[in-house]
Image 1 (cartoon, helix red, strand yellow):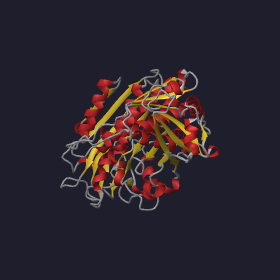
Image 2 (cartoon, rainbow, N blue to C red):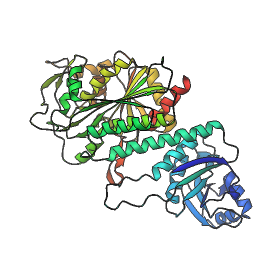
Image 3 (cartoon, rainbow, N blue to C red):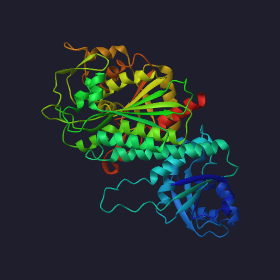
Image 4 (cartoon, rainbow, N blue to C red):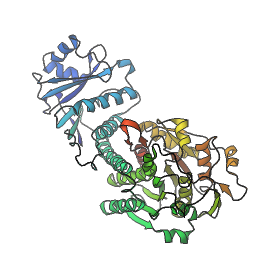
Length: 495
């Protein structure tokens, strides 16, 4: 979907459809008032007849309104003006695109960015329209023998009363790049494990490096052995698919500036290994590489927007399957950091691949390191499917990530990382065990990772509850690409 922004008189805008808002009680938005005047009160007449009450997220399509150049006018309910804020705006945008997709319109002009939203600027409204609009058109049925028809709606104009600023144009371009990054993340996440293997992920990274100014490196298992990544390699032992250790480097900033490192968990299928998962819904364990997918989507986005920042992506990728060579509960392995780990549950494999990746990250002398992982079911129990769990050893880093989370509405919640929980990882036979029991499961998983991050600022995003949806709407969400990209945009602006 193609987006543009321009100053225009709504009544003269020649599009297949114009979109304007109506508040509860029939109060027209400013753009709707302009249309109503040009149409000799045609909109007011509709409201008088109670065909449009202004109830939040309701819509009414009017064909061929006299005095208006557009072929159709879509009225969308804004709810009570006194209550119009973030959630209401997002509901209105979703309802707008849902209604537009039910029409044969190939293009539309939206007069929504001029709506006043409490605490939100123009850039925020532009970004949300582009992200939600792109999401509304997303399809992932290309593996079907007869894929559904692509969305008819192709072009969206964001109409505004005043000439758009250069900042608005920049936001437009950046938001489009973020939307495409989310699309890549969702496409990768939705692929089945027999297609999206560690080798496939490595190929996608190399493909990105051919398209954008990125440097791709892929380490093979023999390379990992030389580095002492025996914790990571213990996960891939039961699979016929070789593990891959992928890095992507983007150097958009000053050479003297330390990079931000993003580490994405890339378990392309997780059966649980010898500690086998229940069969029900095990197919969803193809989503266990959504951390890796979100990192690839983020790297594509920042490279496309030519962000002036240095960023490194690290993706440790493997399958976790049971066979005669697979790790067994009770096995002890040595990590790249030299610390020994007693594997009490082979289904707690994400931390085993991430710990070696976090150790490897130190070689880049990073400004900060953020790992993204579908790590624990315990995080889903704690936070549901609304917020990602955020852990950090640095309060300022956590604050920056939370700020980006709030702005994008890609929600995260700051969780405790107190030393009191560390003792749950004590082992009689190794430096630590890989699980800490049922109590505080997401916290002890983060505590495990924290033992490998003492040399730099670090944050951990547990996205087990937010990376995909189940049920009739099953599919990857593209989160936390909005959060990560906004954080990086903010950092680039600071520099």
